Length: 402
Image 1 (cartoon, rainbow, N blue to C red):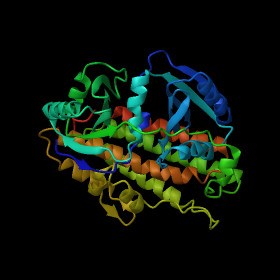
Image 2 (image 1 turned 180 degrees about the horizontal axis):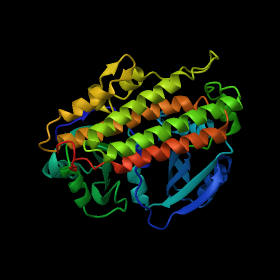
Image 3 (image 1 turned 45 degrees about the vertical axis):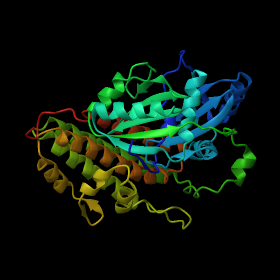
Image 4 (image 1 turned 135 degrees about the vertical axis):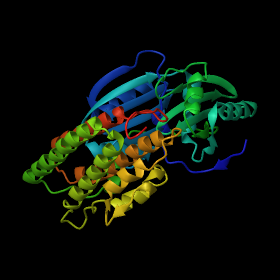
C-alpha cells in the first residue's frame, strides 16, 4: 500500500459510534460536570461523554473511569483544542455557569480501545478512488494486524472502520452511527467520489489520565484575551445588526433557491453575506490594545486552504470576495459528470466556513453572555438550514443548465 505521512487537522474524537444502550442525558451547568466525572470514576465507566454548550462541543473518551482523550470543537470557526486544553477551553469560552446538554455513551471495551487511535499524532494518509481501492487498502491493513481505526472522508461525509488487534469489529458512518459487521456503508461512501483514507493506530503504551481542571490549574493557564468592556447598548446594537444581516440573507437565499439559476445565485448570495459579516466584524475593531483585532478575510482564506482547497477559486476584490465572479465561475463549470455538483457543494461549505470565522470575531466583541448565546444560536441555526439544503456530494440537481 503506497502511503504518505501527513499531519491532519481534524477532530476525530467527535466521530463517535452509537452506544450499546440508550445514552444517559443530563442538563447541568459546566461547573456541575466535575460531579459527573467523579461518578464515571466510581462506576468505572467505559465509553464517551459529549457536552454541548451553544456552538461548542466537548467530547471525552473514558476507559475504566479515567478520561484518556478530550477534544473541543466549535461550529463558529474557533480553533479546536485537545487534551486538558479542551476542558479548559470549554470553561473559558462559555463560563462555568453556562448550561450544557451532556450525553453518556456506554461502549464495549474493545470499541473504546480502538478509539484511543484518535491520540495518534500523525495518521497515515492516502487517496482512494472507488470501492476496489478501498477494499484493497483494508485488506492490506488486516494482513498487518492493524489495531485502531481507519477513517474514510469524502467531501464532508465520513465513515470509520474499527480494527481490534487485526480483527474487524465493524464499521459505521456519519449517517448510520451504529457499528455494523458490514462494510457496505463505507463502500457506498467510497463510490461517491475521490476520498481520503486516514489510518490511525491505537495507543500502545500507558494512556493519558486527564483531570478536570481545578481553579488552580485555570489560574496557571495562559490568560485569554481581555473580554470587551461591559456596554449593554453596544451589545444590543451588535445583536440588532447581526440579526438584521441574517434576516436579509435569509430573504435573499430563499429567493435564490426559487430562481431558474438557483445554484449560481445561491453561491453569489453566500459570498455576499460572507463579505457583509467580515465588514461588520471590521467595524467592531476593539479600542483596547489588548483585545484581538478582527480577522481579515484574506487571512481567513489562507488559514482554511488546507481544509477547504476551493478557497483558491475565490477571486478577491480588495479584501472582499468578488461574488458576481464566483457566480460566473460556477456557470462555466462543465456539467458532464459530477464535478459541477461537487464544486457547488464544496464551495458552499467553504463560504460557510469563512463566515464562521468572521462570526467568531463578532461574538468575541459581545460582553453579555446571554446576548452572545442568542447571536451564536441564530447563526448556527441559519447555517444548519443552509447545510441541510445542500445536495450530497455527487448528487445531481436540476437548474443552472444541468
